[in-house]
Image (cartoon, rainbow, N blue to C red; front, top):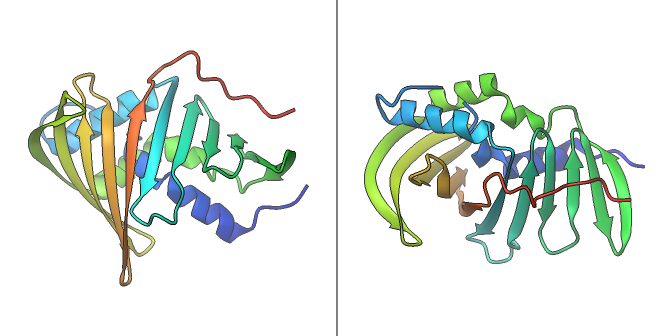
Length: 197
């Protein structure tokens, strides 16, 4: 058993930063309230699937499953990683390693109090209606700064009040990259995540 280096844990947590935008309150009085209401609905999900692609084609496509309250399965093509609470199970070349992570590395993004702060800090505007994969969706733009990284995000929300797609363009210094996240399989009971044996 080995320890996950803080820098590696920090990079892993940033993969899930876009998801934190969905972790938060109520009424539909304006775009920020819309996103807060969506956040509550997203937090209440039992499970979902997300596919993530990067503008840098050297970065592999990532498939992620989530099962409440704290289980993730992440696969970037180099072997699945299962995260349960603050423990990561990494499988490489048929071997599984159990790696402790700093407390709250992943679960912090599903805490409503933190999520409310993140949403409140963001600039959010409604951009009307667009079609995503043949489905009508409300479109929003969100601008946020986190640890010196500016993110400019586009979010498409389906008729069920949950996200269909999100594009996050992050700028750090002179470097800019875009991550596209497509969501599916909301509350699918077939999504199960267990610790490798």
